[in-house]
Amino acid sequence: MHPINRLIASKKLTLFALAAGILIATLPNARADYTPQQTETQQTAKTQFIEAKGVRYAYRRFGKATGIPLVFLIHIRGTMDDWDPAVINGFARDRPVILFSNAGLGLSGGETADTIAGMAAHVTNFLDGLNLAKVDLLGFSIGGFVAQQVTLDRPDLIHRLILAGTSPQGGVNTQGFSPETAKHAGIANPKVEDRLYLFFGQSESSMKAGWEFAKRWKERSTDLEPPVTMAQYQRQLKAGIAWGVKQETPYARLKEIKQPVLIVNGNHDVMLDSVNSYVMYQNIANAKLIMYPDSGHAALFQYADQFVEDATRFLNTPDH
Picture (cartoon, rainbow, N blue to C red):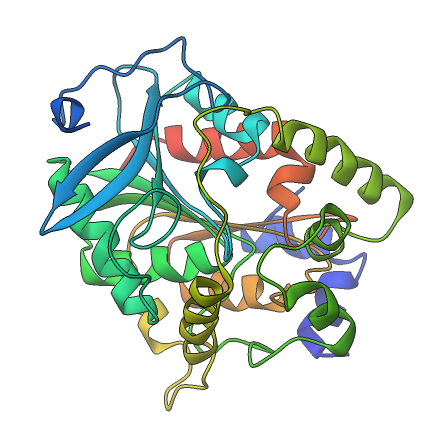
């Protein structure tokens, strides 16, 4: 077992955490002063479109009318429909939220980028198109790769950053899946059972939480986005694999991130080793880490209410 994994697994982590600062546990509407409909939810929010630099992007914007928007970047093979309503609606009670489909995915036009840098360029293009001067950014899985790159490319645009179930560039064990994980991950649109294996732990309690998520996940029934195709998935996968290549100076660019960062994961992530969350915590100056117990890649869905509470506290912390 990797020594950091042993550290995370140790019961001594609680005392260590206290000392180190880790927390365990439509065009007309494209203006920045657009007032979201507070009655809308993840299940009902209308898909809107904006064209920026020749690309037509699909997004959903709702929640509280004022405050810094929280922008969500989804996992690989994901669309706006794949966010957990418990998470999205939880945040929308207190702040504006924006869900986004990157170029070529869902209802967005253009071609799916096959590099993380290309995906990040589409995010900044979209946000500039909305005339947003400052946003908070939440990236889950490959969305976390993109969120890191956006922050590096446009630090002026990002206020606070949340990285969930993700990895730094050149992270640990990021050059492929184990044979068992690959059986569930190597298809464009996995069945619910495959998704639960990839996203949740294998204990009875984690699986129970996974099936509860699966029920919430299908609550949106109209105005749906098309699923990701195999060709699109392969381009995403190409970008993700390149992101995982070891760097000459490991993790050096993480030190360039100066914004407050909240890193969250489960303690047994079979897609992107949980140790990567600790690596990011070690190398980002202003970071906090939450490692949720008995959980996997989608700990933010398993512990939806707790995650929203923890992340809201982080987002609401006064700037110094």
